[in-house]
Length: 285
Image (cartoon, rainbow, N blue to C red; front, side, top):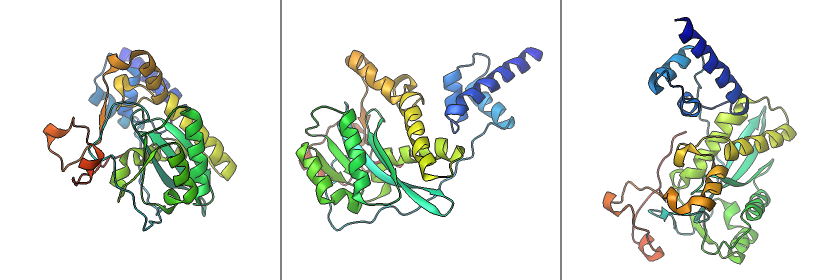
């Protein structure tokens, strides 16, 4: 019994260390990260919940999309993604400090889950979206011809300069009609807020800027992702792609509950997309 108590205490110390950087890291993810050989996953989760290590997840909603009458077709429904820069998704979420609301823009590469661009501001003007887009371009310093930029129908995404910048880079504008159509970046919104920001003491806009950068760095470089091979972090995954692209054999199919299962590996052409009524998945966080 004493040996079991020592093992339990040792794991508790390791959990405390990990949660200093990833305060909202769940127990199942911790199990796969720590890999204890003396206890199974379900018993591990139950044990550390009983010891007070459970994470209470909350979801709060605030309207951040002002829809526009301008609409672009959804180009990503049913799409098979097999490489970086196939689809970028962007979204705006909010963060509240006392009575003040701030707005965070994210741009994510769906294939690697990497956050390419992010900005927090005290307004919802397209200027913030442009800043996030510029950041993404600096990270992806390459030819982006054919890359699909997917978002909701927010007015920021049809602003003249924003669309002009996408066109200059030969990127394709794509839009969804509801939150589920932007599921991947919506999940990132939840992870950054619920696993990081809400666990830190943030009292000012300047602190929020600093903590957002810290959260994104941890998310991109340290946080294990169950959706990636070997639970790699996005930056680690991208580096591995450069070395072993063929060996990884990884692809991402943007799911639809209105498409036949045997069609899931078909990479739809634009002409096909206009004839099919498909949706992206709802991904809980």
